[in-house]
Length: 230
Image (tube, rainbow, N blue to C red; front, side, top):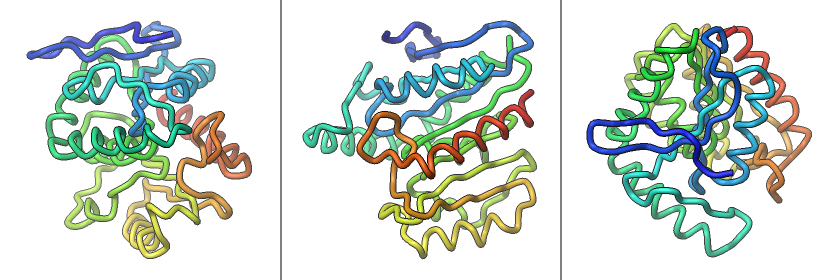
């Protein structure tokens, strides 16, 4: 199933894949994609969150660059295209965050609380959402480019859960240490590192999937969201 919801912005429309109850008492969770777009993995992740009792919405981050990007991370030629899109998105990250602010506001009009969960590129965006957006809680899975954001960080009081793979080449030990050291000063932040797991260890139906890390990380995520959004 493709996109089934639209967020109207001042200069266009950002399509989303959404799943779950639209009842006002149901908390909403924004699912932030990896660099490969709102693909089968992200849609499945969205459906799982919906099954756990949330209104889950996955926006098309790259809509300003190339709407409807769907790439398969198992295909070698997809990575170069995905990396280029991610770089261009990152070059104008303020615009991307502004787009998400509109989505947060739209969800707040109906739902009791709003959270955010992101993976890879989305893990960085979710961390930025924790810092800058009106969300009640945020979860970052193996977010890339987190360390530079720690400098002069003014941490909000809302809760953050971060998952990192101990063997993630995009978050080597020194980066993990810097993240853990800085966030240890924030009582509302919880950083968890999983041994034997690399990058994208929670990507569903993928060669990178590591059940021994993904299962407890996902269980912790659902419990965290239920606690802080329920």
